[in-house]
Length: 132
Image (tube, one colour):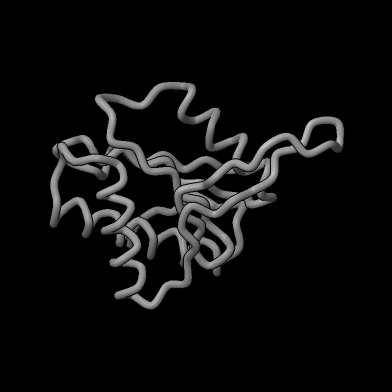
């Protein structure tokens, strides 16, 4: 039996997170590293469809400042209205990538985001869980 840390998320959200990570691992298994982010996002969408997970791609969100609208920001993927996905294909993740996911979580009101860098031999160590 595996040891599992308690989560601040509800059981349903944790299930969606697990399903999303499984999708990402399958996409990476099939495509490997070295492609553009858009290609991984396309394949991710297909894998989510295959597994019958509801998602929105390039979802627009209004950004506000002092309760006034600024601009629309697009988010890579939102799965089951619970999990925000930010896809990267970069040499390595930087603090600005994590800050981007945090800003998106605040803008959307979602609690969890997954930051994934597909440009690695193994994806498993390059997925960051960010909880607001």
